[in-house]
Image (cartoon, rainbow, N blue to C red; front, side, top):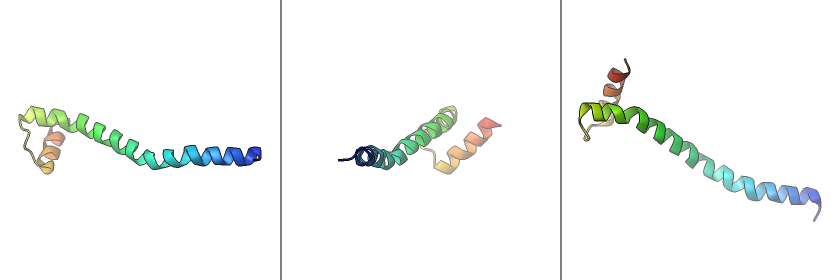
Length: 64
């Protein structure tokens, strides 16, 4: 096997799984960021049964 083929094979074996797992890593970061923003608003309201729309409105009020 030539050095170029070895390099290409290594790139495919490493890059393929990394490209497939990247969306999950991005989604996890977005979920964590949302929890940091919405969590305090929910706790401030003293509620844990709010709808997403109610949480957004409380978060907007808290950020103003």
